[in-house]
Length: 82
Image 1: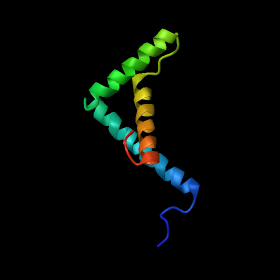
Image 2: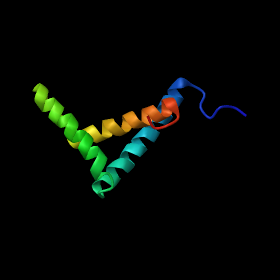
Image 3: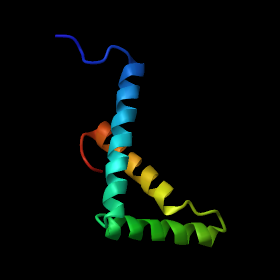
C-alpha cells in the first residue's frame, strides 16, 4: 500500500487545506461565542504589549487566524498541544 501523498508539495497542499478548515471552524466558534475567554485574553496581552512598544496591533480576526494556525503547526510537529 503506497502513501496517500507522493510529494512534499502534495503534503504541503493537503496540510494547507486542513489548516484553513480548522481556522474556519475556530472562527465560526468565535463568532458563536465559543472562544471568547482564552483567545481574547491572549489577544489583550498581545495588544497591550504592542501598544507599550509603540507598534501596530494586529486586528483580532487576523490574530486569531495566526494563533490557531500556530497551534495546528505545533500539533503537527509534536503530535500534541504544546
